[in-house]
Amino acid sequence: MCSSALPVSSVLRWLLVACGALVLAHAAHAGPAAVAAPATSTASAAGLSAGADVAQRGCLALLPRLPRVEAAMCRTLGLTAAPVRSVQGRVLLQADAHTAGTEGEARGGAPERGQREPLRVLVVGAIHGDELSSASVALHWLQLAAREGVQLARPVHWRFLPVLNPDGLVATPPRRTNAHGVDLNRNFPTPGWAREAPRYWEQRTRRDPRRWPGPAPLSEPESRYLHEQMEQFRPHLIVSIHAPYGVLDFDGPSVPPSRLGRLYLDQVGIYPGSLGNYGGVHKRVPVVTIELPSALRTPLDAEMRQMWLDLLRWMGERLTQGLGEGS
Image (cartoon, rainbow, N blue to C red; front, side):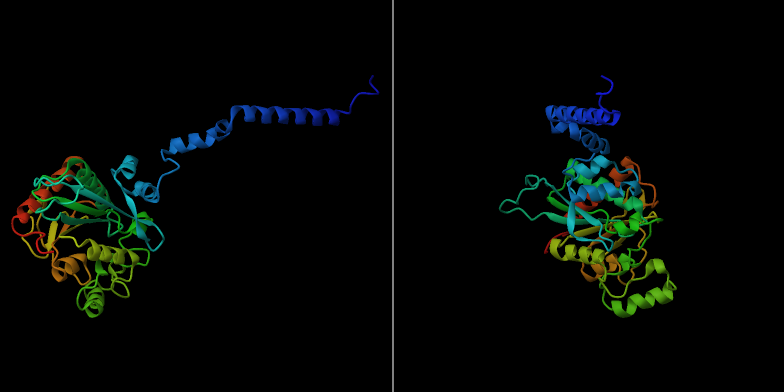
């Protein structure tokens, strides 16, 4: 008997084959769901479905730099990806919201005969990447526009570009300029840019690298995209959110708002290549520039809502004085 016994190595090989067969049989009986369970659990823990679109992923990637913005906002605000990318290939987020006026137009519907076209408002956040709170406020205002509606006589079509400079926002530390080192808010084609913008940078800022206007107007994909939005969307009003000077600025026609929340009007002048100069002075589109008091701390919900309500109140007053007419 002993002389006819199998070698130990043969027994071990037989046991391994048998165990492998049992494992395969169990997997076939349990079905593919059992094999995929660990991956499903990982996805659930991340809170992101496999079908999340590019805009949601782009928003979620920015969350560590967006104070008081929750992941749910990235998934519920209807964000879409712009057809262009930043210098470093990041998504430029945008979203539209349609709110009905008291003239009777249904939310998001086409105007009935005799009704005026919606007022078009373009809201821009984080044109400077180190002004983190400006992106957060833009997203919170998008939420208010989508959920609360607007009690104005005229319907409003809002377009939000909440993070125009994602490369600057995610840099360590966050930087004012884009990835090419260009101050996007000095890169718009104001008259005489080729002479005035470089001269202002050299003489007035003493070649401050944070305020370099770039090699040419609209040299950057981010500023070009905002310029394209101004040409295609044709806003009646532009709201540009900044930080940290804690004031309210205004350029262009119409009477400026005297205050938004705790921010009071203090017009600080215009600069070659700035959005206020290009949009408000050159294109004759009112530009409300909001300077939040902190670049790192997002205002409380009540403060953001009060600024929003004050903006709507001013818009309602200006509607009776021609805001949005003739364009």
